Image (cartoon, rainbow, N blue to C red):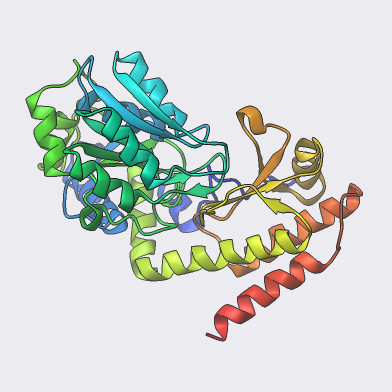
Length: 380
């Protein structure tokens, strides 16, 4: 039986060249060979996140990197603001509350995004709020937030801004330095095209200064210790050696393609998929959609049946909804190592699945809309 090809928003497809790096004999992490790979990986992440500031790599998932960011950037009893626009952005609040931080949540309906006005109002009502925790691309809804605008508001209120860029890095510009972002969090199984196991955090001088001024007690997730080790091309503790080697190769591939081209490819794929599902008579969940994943509202509670049928009959794996969206949406991932041919594969299978299940409204319109979207782009 074939293993299903992944079209989920994470884990994402991993290039063969990247997988091959993990099949080589294991090396020791306290060697020059590994230090060179680690340094190349950190520089590659600086390239993707558009920053000259330190980027530390953690042996953890993206959620581990989020926890590291919260515990290092806050103190017990401080007030922070969180934009909650989906299942994953709620995690900022959940982590902060565990550590005794006072959280002011800006909540929206799933599919919507927080407005700059709502962020401005939250700061006005909570003077002295220390950090704004926000999410660039909300993986659970496929929505994209305006973190550049949020950063301007945070700076005006003398607060730091920490951004979950776990599914936006590589799919959209994350202009860390130009936008004035203080902590930017990412994960390995997303746009950087490698297996799960690594989290990473970019840190501004202001973030490092706040950590030095006072924070929660911390041991393994000590970002000051991680920054000090990174300056020596090292890690405080045993790293996930083979995944770092995979990261080095994946980031090399992204450099060779060029960041602008990587982002343009994501935009082309996402735009084409959105055009296709809309032509099928389906509705998008996100009001402002991300290039990482397309969340599609499905008739009734058919989302589970659609995802299962696609996997069983066509060997393609897409994701369902989470929390209150379970059974109501499917999410088609186009984050990472995907090209135009892949989008034809997933859209044709999705359209065929709807037809197989008696849910098709306009069979054939999806693939045709996909084709016209790519043709229009190539004609520009």
